[in-house]
Amino acid sequence: MLKDNPVMKKLVETGEERIGKIAQQLLSNEKFVAMVQSLVSRSLAAKGTLDTALRTTLSAMNLPSTADLEQLRAKVDDLEKLLASVESKVDTLVDSKKK
Image 1 (cartoon, rainbow, N blue to C red):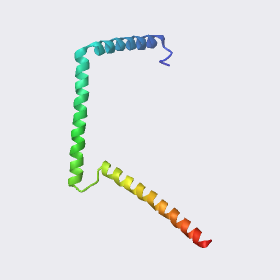
Image 2 (image 1 turned 120 degrees about the vertical axis):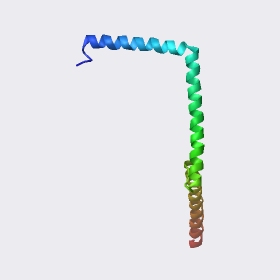
Image 3 (image 1 turned 135 degrees about the vertical axis):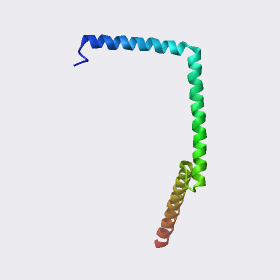
Image 4 (image 1 turned 180 degrees about the vertical axis):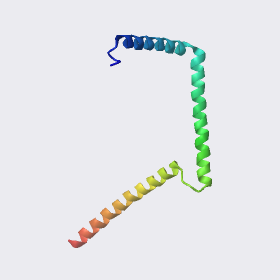
């Protein structure tokens, strides 16, 4: 209903044009771009610090981290492959003994 209203269409178009112009002005402003880059860089550094603190806390509480679980899963996968290989060799030996 509102989408079919010509006044609403005009308002939306005007708003989109103005937001586009503001975005262009902000992105052409070197200070703004530098500030955004600095903010992103600081956020990533804070995330790294938080991740390190979380791993340390989990370790102190004797709880596994995500990395610990991934390492464990990789070891279990390796063991499954090894067992499958051993099983295959045993089957081959059993079959050769039957003949």
